[in-house]
Amino acid sequence: MFTGLIREMAQVKSFAKNRLVLKAKHPAKLGDSIAINGTCLSVVSIESDGFTVELSPETLSHVATEKFNGNVHIEPAMMMGDRFEGHIVQGHIDTIGTISTISDNGNSYDVIIDVDPQFIPLIPPKGSITIDGVSLTVNEVLKNAFRLTIIPITMRETLFGSYKKGTRVNIETDVFARYMRHILTTSSQKELSWNDVEHIQSLY
Image (tube, rainbow, N blue to C red; front, top):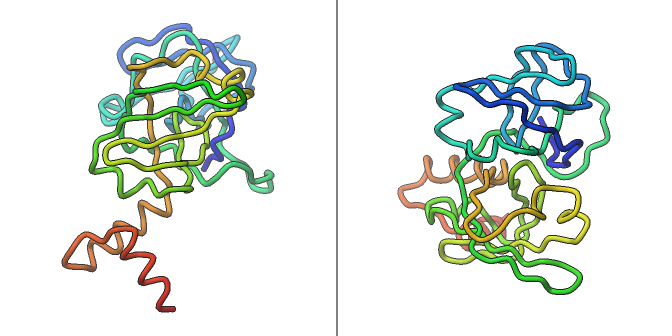
């Protein structure tokens, strides 16, 4: 499990076939789970200045592999007793989104990310979402997109500062939204909207 708070910007040394070699300060151990741009991967080799992780064919088909270049976000898995910040992140990428707009508001940036409409029910307004491993809050949900507000420190300390229109990003929706939708849709004859969910909650 992760929190969506980036602990280090690691440097990609090489990415070939299914192996990603990173230069990093984090003292990884063989078998550790580490989120790379939000994707939970296992350490398969320790290098003198970093570590290597391996990607399965399933993972390769679901993440923005072109981002395994230059710098990447890394977050080691939480340990028992760690302070919990951000939100509950599994490191399981649901889909890839595309940045359509970045607007500078002076003291923040509005970022609109296009996404396949089938994932919109998993993105509730004011809910949590993980973009390339970064824990963020959804400010607005549109028909086939959603809006985030990024503060300057996040722009400076993460890859968001290098993103532009057309950049593809890994998206992990909120785990509770994902589980709730699965439970409700498999036990109901129709797909429930968030208004339906709120109505059900108001009955208890």
